[in-house]
Image 1 (cartoon, rainbow, N blue to C red):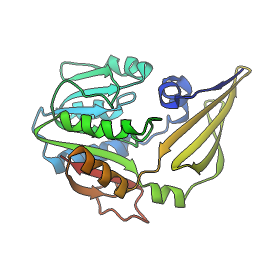
Image 2 (cartoon, rainbow, N blue to C red):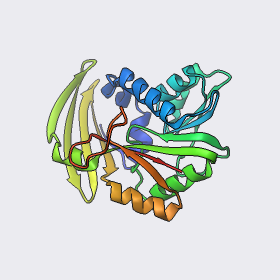
Image 3 (cartoon, one colour):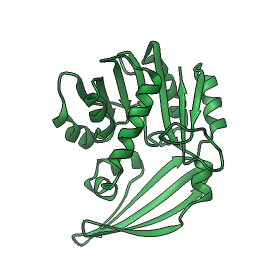
Image 4 (cartoon, rainbow, N blue to C red):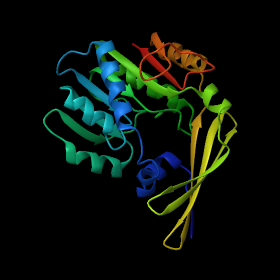
Length: 243
């Protein structure tokens, strides 16, 4: 049996295999980023933060531990089910499509770890930025933490195999029609599985164009989680602050 999913972000993220493949994500690095970002933005004590496309909630949980009132939302029902076990009075998780407006306003809306540019319908990318804008209060800031597509393409590893929990994940990477594509294949319990990740290779210029269309203003751009200057050829991240 071979499984090939069309809407990859709505299916791959909901499988246990996605979380197995990426189980070694750097939690310390994520915490350093949240420390630096919240200090830079000077978010008030118990300030409200929306973590847009929160996955299993690692950023939301840490932000809440810093004293913020956090709502984490994601399209993946399984991820939200997992994250919900960590809920408290100031930490909630909900299933939500990030391209649709969220019916509350916040001191900050964070879209982290390249959780953007997935949609088959390209208009949804612009709609997501517009939705972030509507979710910001008068003093709120939007943050998109995206890959630096130029750097990623220049350093693309065409093929590799990652062995995790007894599973060999065969990964092939390519650039097709403006997307950075990763094809993932593996076998488990006698069944073959195939999934594909597709992310639009947006550049800073692309985001500037979308920000202009959405009526938001780009305030700062950083190139890593220590909030150092962005360099198009050398920075690994493209972190944008806007309102």
